[in-house]
Amino acid sequence: MATIRVELPAHLRALAKIAGHEVSVEVAELATVRGALDALEAMYPALLGTIRDHEKGERRAFLRYFACMQDISHDSPDAALPAAVADGREPLIVLGAVAGG
Image (tube, rainbow, N blue to C red; front, side, top):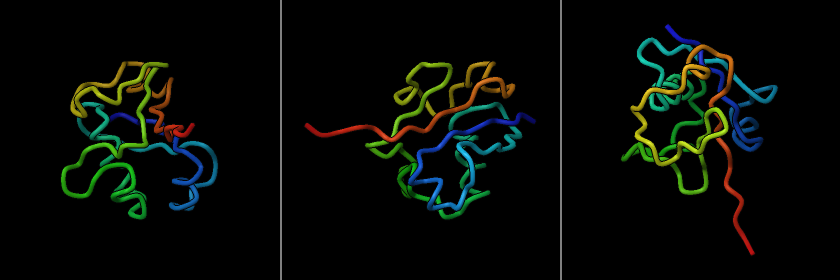
C-alpha cells in the first residue's frame, strides 16, 4: 500500500471542500496516476468527472499532471509514478492549465 500526496487546483479543492493544498490517498496497487485518481474520486465523489472524462477516463483538456517537476500528462495513466511520489516525498500535482492571449 502506498500513500500518495495529491495537490489540486483551488477550484477543485473548493468543489470537494478540501482544506489545504493537498490530500493523501491510499493506493493498494502499483502507484499510478489512474490508481491515485481512482482513490481520490472514491474519497471525494464531487470530483468525479472533473479531472477525467466520465466515459473515456481521459484527462480533461485544461488539466495537467506533474510528478517530480516533470509533465506526465501524456504518459500512460497506468505507468508507475516516480519513487519519490510513490513513497510520499513528492506530490502528484494536478494543475489547471493557463490559456488565453
